Length: 383
Image (cartoon, rainbow, N blue to C red; front, side, top):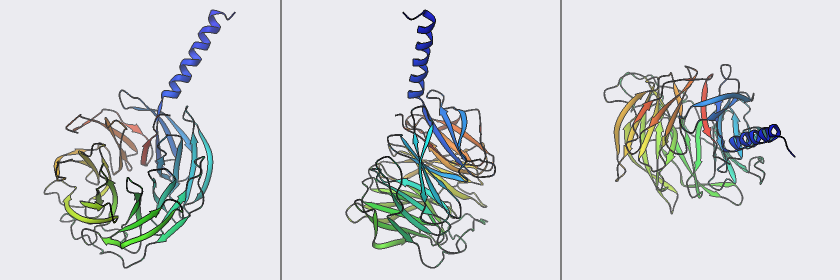
């Protein structure tokens, strides 16, 4: 017969196991030397706080991340001259087991995304201006690229014509620089941005072979000369996307023809407050799950621009919120849309904001999470 003490120990062990199984983890990629690699945090479901900071990998400049929909596999790109992508299996307690590492298909990988069915990992390589498709095996590990494409063409304008007065947001219009790649919500088409060439590329995806076929036309020009197209988010219905232009600090809407897989440019608005003058580099953006709240990170202005999306798809500027940090690189919304996290690269911290239901209004939650040069955060779904 078990003693009372043994029963107590067994009960506590079961409770600890259950707590681990129910825990939700946030993964943060960083830049060296301030950041030492990839970090894991436990997310408090009530307060949104990030705690139990743990360095789980010293992969250099592990700055770009994505996680599988089932929360069991994590991928990180080492943003190095010779780019690599690492795959890990995530255990219920948040521990990682290395699966494998493959080439990113170019130099300086700056973006990773999985196709909707999780069968392919898409990579944008900034330094080389290439994109790649990496097939995902049944165990979550990666195969070598099934397809790569090299962006080619004349460099974009050296000065962004749509930027704010007095802006010196001039960078890397010296050749191809792929900045993001993602498939549409149905997984039929793939789009990639090239900041250096001021282009948005359009592809058809063959899911069986992992091959990309240039669409007709193969690319469209950015909304203005020297704009520097960066990141984009699809609407919930998959009938369009919002794209942020880094150097122009503008936000452009594109409608998506689901039959042809081609984009049509719509309206463009500034990501900055009316009357702002000077330099700014627009960065990450996130859209709420219902498609009604859009948030944009402005670097140097150090703000989050909050827009609501009207029923007819128009953007309505609501507010500009100080990030409480310096050089916000990316934004992350939790799965329930209750908390928004800001990766403040130059001030070496993460700040978080409470998201009001319905209005989407942001309120700073006092407290800072110290971490060197944060680049991106993803939150893994509960297993």
